[in-house]
Amino acid sequence: MKDIQSEIVMTTDGLKDMLGRVSLTPVEKARAILLDALRDSTGKTERCSLSDALDRILACDLLSPEDLPNHPRSTMDGFAVRAADTFGASSSTPCYLEIDGDVAMGQMPEGTVRQGQCFRIATGGLLPDGSDAVLMFEHTIPVDEKMIEVVKSVGVGINLINWGEDIAKGSLALAQGHLLRPQDMGLLAGLGISEVDVYVKPKVGILSTGDEIVPWTESPPPGKIRDINSITLSGLCTRLGATVTDYGIVTDSEEIFFATVERACNENDVVLFSGGSSVGMRDLGERVIEKLGSPGILVHGVALKPGKPIIIGLSNGTAIFGLPGHPVSAMVCFELFVDPALQLIAGMSPSENSLQATVHALLDRNINSAAGRLDLVRVQLQQRKNDIPLAVPVLGKSGSISTLSRAHGYFFIDEASQGINKDSQVMVHLLS
Image (cartoon, rainbow, N blue to C red; front, side, top):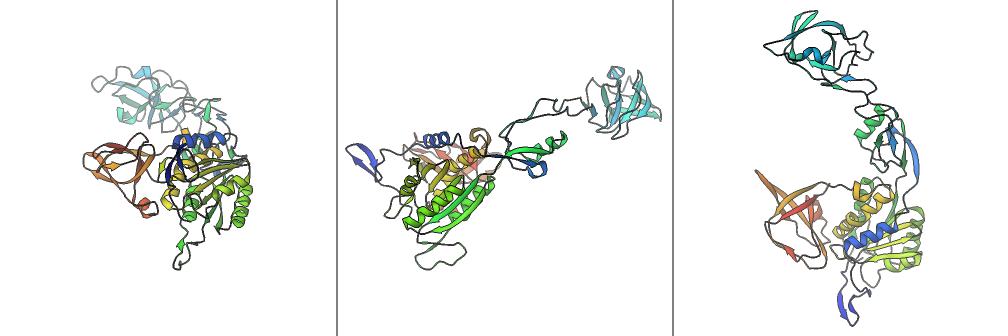
């Protein structure tokens, strides 16, 4: 459906738009309303094997069941020594140690390192009794097979990792809400944890509305356009770990549209439809969300460009988003509203886990903005030798999906500003 920006008109009651809204909702307020409504919507949990846990969200705190390591280990190839035996050693005044044993990898050392003695040890080898440091090979000179000359002293605890130094038994290994990365799985494997409790992946239903939309796999006849949003939104949801059901293209008939959205709400945690959020003769999004039941619409229209006409609703615990039909507007709204909602439903804390790579850059031209709205400006980054990069705006209308493909990231112009001058430093959020 057409993505028509709602016209603002002056009335005797103040500033209202064609939907009767007194004013557009600021982005941060709209997001706060949404997340507050979803506080009790954290998903169900399940147990999965560690090998299947990549990119899953922990449903409870994990405490270390043991010390790691469970025995002091060498972090260098060299000799296990009593540090005191090396004190004062230098190339001009070396000391001498007797080699009294070897530490075999994967086995407990036999014997004790006594005064004036040492054991050969490899990286990862268990430290023998009596020793408290590891002397690197590079700081020794062999005298014969049973004696070394020490040319540099070593301190207590040097070149080894002590009992429980990595993580102590009973301490927090990973917190609830943590996104499991490969390195986290390595930590849990090292602790002998083979299964973890995780949140069930959020379910997302996606549909596109409009009689002018045809599947992206087809060649559109005159007057029709390919469905871009369904595959784009599906990809964004999948990257966040959600499972996606595509309900296809839905006609502008209110009866059919309502039945499809109702079914999607019954089967999913989040429902996304695009094309029915702006003002128009046949835009059904607002009416359909209201018919679905309490609490209904939470927000309709935000002070944002692009993406102003978004609808945010809730029906029986299912979050519903009416996204603009234009692809760029839809993706911007997804970034600002759907992404944090999915993270919250999945068991993550959006404020703590939605870390996005950013870089500072200098704006290469003046950009104007209207006070009272948040503007998102897409940019390409141009690297400069020995200086911070330039941010070159990628200008285009909200229907131009190529602007996002060409952009490296974006920055915001806040509501209080009427623009940003050339050569101003901006914080660019990098697109993945």
